Image (tube, rainbow, N blue to C red; front, side, top):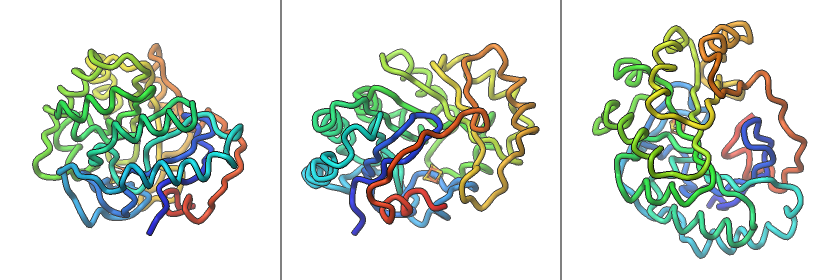
Length: 255
Ligand code: SF4
């Protein structure tokens, strides 16, 4: 069985990031993104449940924290599956903050944000990084291949609603690949309604079934986002960090 805590990993977006995996099960997600570095989703679900008992996370985190202290900037809830699916997400955020005293981030695909209990849990974090890869339902189907019950319009509506409820740092992650690279203008338009604190222009530079866009292609997309508060994968340097448990880390971030 996978351990719930991994890393720390060098993140171009968050710094030295200690990971907590709220799902600990490969290929469980509400999306099946074409670029997913973990491969195809075999269990595509939207029901929330407890995948990893909170007590186990607390024990794992306390165990590793003595060795990691001073070598991490943030605790990030992310890993093998979608964190919003974890019914105990809010509790895990509290545990992460209590044990480490660090800021807590959640990386999410935004798919369950229309649920009040999910938004309430996410709002307990200091940083929420929400995925938005598509300008319209057609591209959404092609890029993210969501669970059939997920409606693109409703998802966008809930992403705008969350902005009004969340006092922390709200970032949008946009993963650009061949399928959506020509829609940057439309995607910029969508961000105006969401009003994020930051836009992260990304492409799958790590292990992925699809090719990452080149630096030149990303430059063109950056031009479209000129005047917004964006950061981009090719511009940011990754920090140096000592990973404590390499095997557990590779399960979540294959090289
Ligand atoms: S949302 Fe993340 S974990 Fe889920 S399929 Fe997409 S990339 Fe993979």
